[in-house]
Length: 289
Image 1: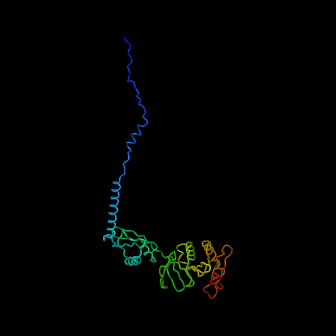
Image 2 (image 1 turned 90 degrees about the horizontal axis):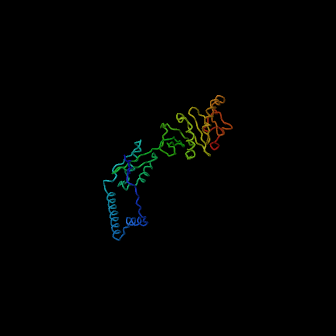
Image 3 (image 1 turned 45 degrees about the horizontal axis):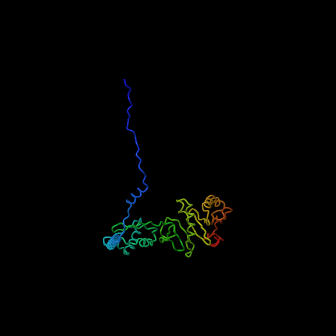
C-alpha cells in the first residue's frame, strides 16, 4: 500500500507590486477641479436677473401697500374696563391707520399710553386688515387728600381720577396737609414701604399723613385717634413696638395725642391728649415733625 500524498488546500497567495507614481493623483485632481472661466456674458446675465428680481419685488411691494384689501378696517381692544375701551376707540378712530403693512405701531402705542389708566399697550397686526391692542391697566393704590382735593393714584403716583367727598373708596388714605405740598417719589416710596408691613386686612384701617421737611410718615389707626410718628425707616420694628406698648400707655396715662417712634432704639416720646384736641400735637409744629 503506497503512502498518501498531501494535496494543497488552496492555490498559493501571491502579491503583485505596482510602481508608485508620485504625480498620478495630482493629475487626476487637476482634471476634476478644472475651473470655469467667468466671462462678460455671465456677468450680464447675473445683472439682468438681479435687476428683474428687484424690479418685481418693488412693484409687488408698491401694489401691496396700496391695495385696499390690506387697509385696517377693525381694531380689537382687549381690556377689563369698558370705559378704557371706549376712550381708546375714540382716540384711534381719529387716526388714519391706512395700510396694515405701513402701519406705525409705535405711534399707536404712544397714543394709547396717553390714557391715564393704560400702563402698557401691546399692539399686534392681524392680517389681512385687523389690529389687536392688549391693555395692561393701572391699578388703584391709594386716595390722596391734598387740601380740598381728593384723587386716586396708582403705585407709581399717577393721578387716575378725582374723588368726591361723597364717594366711598376702599383704598388707603394719604393726607397732604396743604394743596401746595406734592406727593414726591420719595414720599410715595415711604407710603409703599409702610403699607407692605401691614396685613391686607389692616391696610384700610390706617390713614397716612406725610409731613415735611424732611419727609416724615405719620399714621393714624382707625381704632385709635393717636398719631404715630414713624419717620422714614424701620417700619416693621416701630409698628411692633407700638402694638406692644400702646394699650399699656393708654391705661397708665389716658388717651394719647401722639407717639414718636423715630428714636425707638433709645426712647419713645408720647403726649397725652389734652382737653381741647388740636390738629397737631400740642407744642409740636409741622416743621418740627
